[in-house]
Length: 276
Image (tube, rainbow, N blue to C red; front, side, top):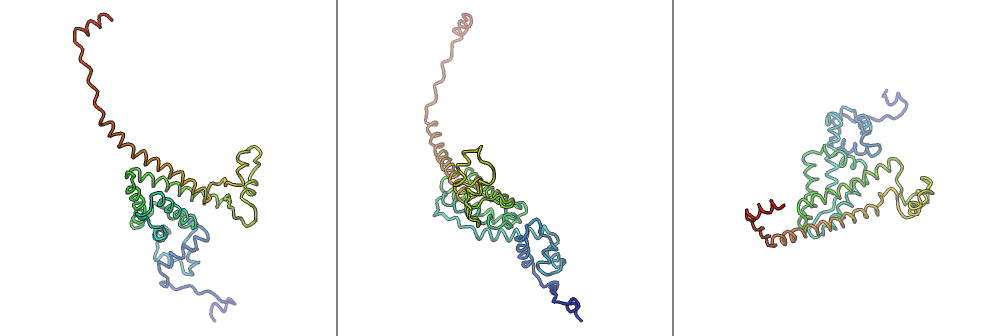
């Protein structure tokens, strides 16, 4: 009599060793982490999800770190493919808005991708590093083509990149702590209604007057767009200042040199010293 019959019911048959591939394991790891988190992923719970023995996973990945590295490579590939192309026909302002709005949407829509691509950057493989930096090269290259010096171009990109990533992480923290304020709540309450329940606003009249229109979390789409617009305004000013420097330097170079002061005669110098 089979073991399934002895137990009185159907019993799942574990897949045989060698019947699963590394690609299936990585795919299963993404499925597991999206149900829990990257930190809670373990070889045993992954094996259970895939219905294989743990040794089948260790056959391909000797430790969790190797599995995470493989997941990072997959995430980088998907991320690069999902990002909009940076093309010469776009203005640098348009390119920055599109590029970082897309990055925020990608990272914000998948916490596993966010952990792998924002937190584990030091563990990127050589190919993953190259592919991510090639995206940076395209953005910086467009900035240089449209007038920024290479040094200013990389700083412009770094500044808006840090702002975008910070917005994604802040929104993630708020969601994890149930502190996110969403205007499309299913309970029918408005954004202002929910924010008013947070605390007593009687001692904060200015904030109280803003609750019906603005989010105190600062992570909504309009908050992000506002910040990007302000950054771009600053970058436009930087470009103006940068263009003005060569003109100022050229004007200074054309200015005639000051005539040297006539040398004093020794006699007069001694007389003045005595009289003083």
